[in-house]
Image (cartoon, rainbow, N blue to C red):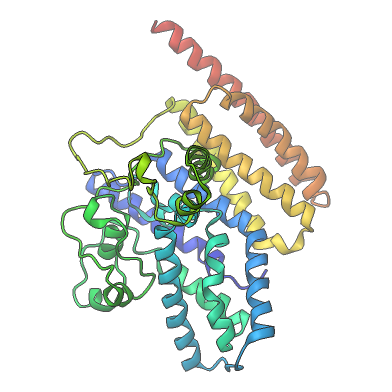
Amino acid sequence: MDFNPIILSIPIYFALIGIELLIQAIKRYRIYRLNDAITNISCGITQQVSGIFFKVLSVAAYQWVYENFSLFEIAPTWYNLILLFILVDFFYYWAHRKSHEINLFWGGHVVHHQSEDYNFSVALRQGSFQIVWTFFFYFPLAILGFDTINFVLMSGLVTVYQFWIHTETIGKLGPVEWIFNTPSHHRVHHGRNPKYIDKNHAGVFIIWDKMFGTFQEEEERPTYGITKQTASWNPVWVNLQHYIEMAKGLKQIKGFKNKMKYVFYPPGWLPKEMGGQLPIPEVDPEHDRKYDKKTSASFSLYVLLQYIIVLGGTAAFLFTANTFDLWEQIIAVSLIILGVTGAGVILEEKKYSFALEVIRVLITPVVVVFVLLPSVSPLIQYLIMGYGLISFAALIFIKKSNQTIKQATT
């Protein structure tokens, strides 16, 4: 396994989520909703496993620029690594800012802002396509002469830093707020209040926002989410929704020039004949309601137990991905995405969710045993196959029980 600070920090991430859950139990106020938190983590899983392919392209592109255009060879001394960390954060600010200011780029980043809660699980909610629109922002570092390995390391550390700022359990931090990005600053960034939109783009150092005019102090408590509610727990759909809406918009807009403006101007831009730039809607805390479609308690428990298994399988895959060939990686990633998608559509009570889950629990063990792990011990193979049969039986039992309850109450 390559040294990746993000993957190595996974146990810390879940430990901090556990601490927030403990705070929720002690203080008896709601920080987490099962459906929202699972969707957040599902988006993170989808981004990490699909990133195995996207990151290869982005890292290869950085290496190509470094090999062909670097002006210097900067030695990895401790002070040069500190300088690189600061510069990575500087270019992160611009990549992040433009991800808000360009409609096409926003499609890769909007996923991170869709949650209407604000807790550590939101930090894991990342768009799978964001890297496509941001990797080239860092090419100046390759041209300066910072090698690829140290760039990837510092970039990972900048990402890891940002996990702890996704919480409402930490208030303002005094002088720390002058220089560093903090939970208070980042709560503003996730707010959909008009005054908070497109503010505080910093990763580590809030000084970039103060220097370039995008800083906003936290005042009233933010209302989280995006201006148009996503209303889905499906991690695949939430990654595609913006682009599907863009495709519809492009069909309606006339003229090549206007189409290009729609793609590269800020989100919400429309030609004058279609009404012009859409206004940012005001927040109405009394009437605005979070999307919170729920399934039965039995299916929720089923999803939670299945999800723990999928998490374990995902972690095992991420730590050993380099031991699989390309086709095995594609198969494994597909099974993982199918697993988290199945959880989402069950929580939404989609009509096809039961059939999809039956297919998943029957196919996954077979593929794992005979394609991905054919050389594991027979005992483990029996356990994997047994998991599939038990899951199938549980699905049938829960569905019949729910049908009986519905008939008894109607």
